[in-house]
Amino acid sequence: MNLPAKQLIQTHPAATRPSVRRFSSPAVEAKIATISAQISDLQLRELFINCYPNTLDTTVFHQENQGGTPDTFVITGDIHALWLRDSCAQVWPYLPLAQQDPALARMIAGLIRRHTQCILLDPYANAFNDGPGDGTQHREWQNDHTTMRAEIHERKWELDSLCYAIRLAHGYWQTTQDASVFDADWLAAMQLTVATMKEQQRKTDAGPYRFTRQTHWQSDTLPCNGMGNPLKPVGLIASMFRPSDDACILPFLVPSNHFAVVSLRQLASLLDIHYPQVSLAKTCRQLADEVEAALLAYARVQHPKHGTIWAYEVDGFGNAIMMDDANVPSLLSLPYLGACRADDPLYRNTRRFILSDDNPWYFTSSDGKLSGVGSPHTLAPRIWPMSLIMRALTSDDADEIARCLTMLKHSDGGCALMHESFFPDDPSDFTRSWFAWANTLFGELILRVAKDFPALLQSSTAGEAA
Image (cartoon, rainbow, N blue to C red; front, side, top):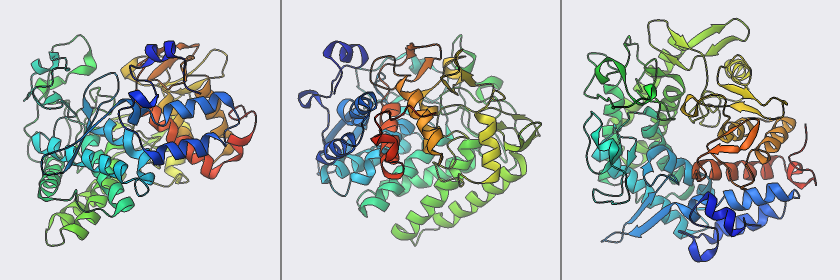
């Protein structure tokens, strides 16, 4: 069911043939065989077979360091660099299989160790090179006006980057009970993580972070001499860039602050177990409570049609931006990240807003068959498959999930892979032919559908319901 060789060359440089795979997991292969046998729709089956292992097949660089510790570098796909956010999200769907496959668990442990070293190098960086001498990197971002180092690929302060590193460590511990990753370096990285979050509450000053770039893209640089637009310190954590890597307009990114609340409490639970003598767990809980209270006080807005909803960005002065972006964390993804229940009334109001024309970044094809959330990162009116996947992952409505599967099938541009974005009236007009996060996330969705809505896969017209 894999793509023909010609199409594979057009989409990404490594096919799913065993001879060219970067990493292979027997547990993942067994899961592919089990789930694909349940999918009657041939196109949906082909998408799953290609997408679910794409991170392992094409992006994982795993080795054993001297001393026998694992080390894993995971690229995004067509960009040969490790994003803290993307790399966590890329391996996340494999976590449930880690107990069955020691090599898979060790690969993920190696990524957690790499995250630790990245954070210790610079907690403000979002993306990293595989060492200072990595000759595969393009170097134009080394000229950014910020504190760059050769090991750093890009230094955009994104609050969610640190949250993702916590999420992966917490998920890994819950799944494997392997404490080997929680060494002294990890503790130091977590201390630096919390200190950076507190620093970016900007209660006394703007902190040390500055960023400007010589560019013709407004969203690639920060105003106010690299500090971002003004904010009023209210307890929220400033994030200068969104998970799309676009600059925030207002400094308090609401979905990332929700994510921080979840992550800080997860970190506290890890510290309770592995470092009970350290006071950092108490600091985590206090900061989580403070951010949560500030979200309730400053991040809720009144929409004329949808009632009280979450804003996307606020500044503490009472100003707000009402929209959503497909990149996760998003407002749509809050239940997926554990920030709220899917039936929470405030989330339901927000969800109705997001999935409507009242969201300026929600787009629909001219025939009405394709609709979803896009991103300023890819301009209007492109839809992101990630938004369709996240809509389905946060839904318990079989008809809604089936419609998302239908749209995902018709969004692949004939490549049997997910992409970053596509033009609603012509899905063959897409961006990023090799985007591993979206591919693996699609695999995660199919696993969830197989578990909770198996009839959607077993029908001969799977994914073609209303």
